[in-house]
Length: 248
Image (cartoon, rainbow, N blue to C red):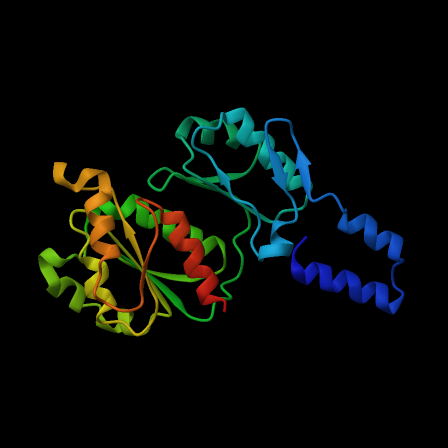
C-alpha cells in the first residue's frame, strides 16, 4: 500500500463507506513478512515513498523468486531487482512476467509508473565502458517515475562531445555523472550545471585506478560546488537519490 492508497482508505472511513475494522484489515499492522531467509519490508513505501528493492547478487534464484512472490501478495505494482544474474532471471521469468536487461542486470516485474518527476534526470558517462552502471542508474530512475536523458561516451578525452549536449545539461533538474579512470567528468559537469550533480565512480580503468578508488577520490575532492558522490559502481544509489530530488 502506498501513501495515496492509504489516504483514499482513510477518506472512505471518514465518509462511512467502510468500517474502521475493514480499514485496519486492509492496512495490516504487520510491518514485514518473515520468509525465514528474508524479512520483506512491506511498509517501506508508506514510510519512504518507495517500496523495497531486491538486491539480487549473492541471493539464490529461489530466494529472489520467493521475495517476489511475497511482494506481489502485498499488491506491489512494480518490483525492481538489481544485480540479477541471467540464471536467476531465467528462473524467475518461468513464474512471473519479468522484464530483464542483461547489460544493467536489472529485472523489473509489473507496470512502469507514469513519469511524474518535476523535470528531467540526465545520466552521463565518461566512456562506453561505464554504460552498465549508467543503465542501472537510468532504469532505477525510470522505475520511480522519472524522465531520463542518456548522454553516453562524453568524457574529458573529447570535451567537444559533452559541449554538443549543453542544452540537456543546462535544462536538467538532476545530473548523474558516471566515470572511471580519473573520474574528471563529475567536476566538469559540476562546473557547468545549475542543478545537483550525483557522481558515480566506476571500477573501469587500468591498475592505478585501484578498482574505482582513484575515481572515487577525485570525485570526493572535486572543486565544483553541488557535487555529491555515491559508492563505486553504485548506479542504483544514484538513480534512487536523483529520483528523490526530482520529486521534491
